[in-house]
Length: 351
Image (tube, rainbow, N blue to C red; front, side):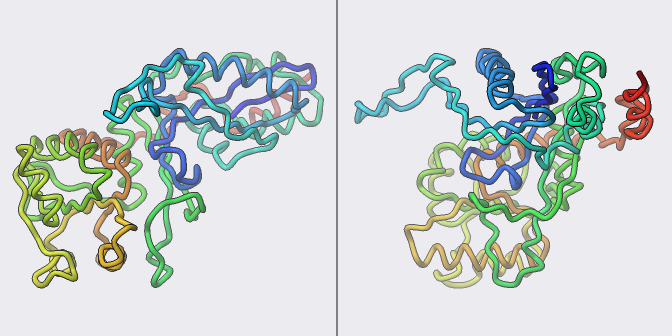
């Protein structure tokens, strides 16, 4: 999100990094501010492009831009043996869209950086002031000593029969925010605020259920090893359990719904599952039907569920962070000198 004034001055309000990969609607994806894994070189390209785009579009007020950033190494399309090729920063950054308007992320960014962004935008649009007069000429993201996480609140439990998988269509009806000096703790706070109860460390009596499609198994392996290191009790369907066992991860096996009983859905109904990590298998009709029923059961019994590899990675780190007590802190602790938007408007509008 960025602000631009009538004189062509542009200031980036905040850069956020989505947890889920491109393809999941931005309104349904959790995000970190400031970014946690995007390289400085790629961020510099974005910081160079945003002001030039805002000026070219003659924006006065807010502009929201969305980018896709490729990994530093990608599979070589000319190779059949999985060879990777390294990409230069300028080959990794792609602009998806530029919207010359306010985005739903503005309230989150304002709270995360301690500036009344919407107030600034309104004053800039009235052409009664400029960014230098507002004293907002430097991107605040660069100097933050904390991390803010936005998480979507999804209403699947209110719509009988609706599936819980995330995709390009927005499903969320609200957002929550976690904030802390630690990115992992901030993510844990956001999950708890969104109703995702994280499994207790050292296992407890409940188990963490896993079911990965073939594409996801390799990527999930280090996550499974981290879960094992946390002494969580793991249970998985046969294919996933066999793969994990062959790679040194101890895991109990349970039937899929169509394979017999007791199956995974029975475990959910009996209150044996603390969390589910599932990636869908659309190529198998029986698995697709099972997966949908299982996800609906998880909703009915309020079992937290993660359906993307990126989400699983972030969740594991959040679980680790709960080893210490989470402390709720008001925004004033992070921005003690910040006034309310109404007071800021009065100050900004003075000649």
